[in-house]
Length: 201
Image (tube, rainbow, N blue to C red; front, side):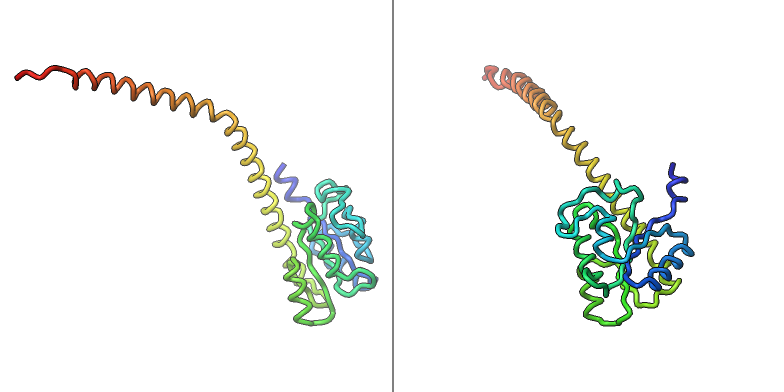
């Protein structure tokens, strides 16, 4: 099973209102062995992810329940209607999608814009035109996200296991405390007669 999973290409959702830019990022991603889905707006990206445009907390499907799971989202910053920054915020506000890595692209090198996106939870900020060398930066974020998911799942399993153990532990504690009380009582019985023996003058 592990071998099959490792051979499955990572799925990237690319969001850009510019057709030439969308074609370019799609070609670069496919050249780098990614599976790609492209959409031309932030609202269409949210629909694909199962989030309603007007309410990020209302999620119809979870990320792992999508027909094709999305491992990373790469979006243009400047788009009409919903910007890439707005899309980023919607994704990070969703409890079921916030762990998906998000990469922002922009043709403008504006430090304040870059910092704002990174502070909001973006994993990378690429300057356009995006190059093939940029694609190598995507996989570590996906792998880190997967490691985090596995860790969270393990934590949940451990918590459920500890809860089940807590349910059965009180009887064990009481029985052990009872046995310790019995031992103390027996020790006292052995010690008391020695103290009550009459002393020979």
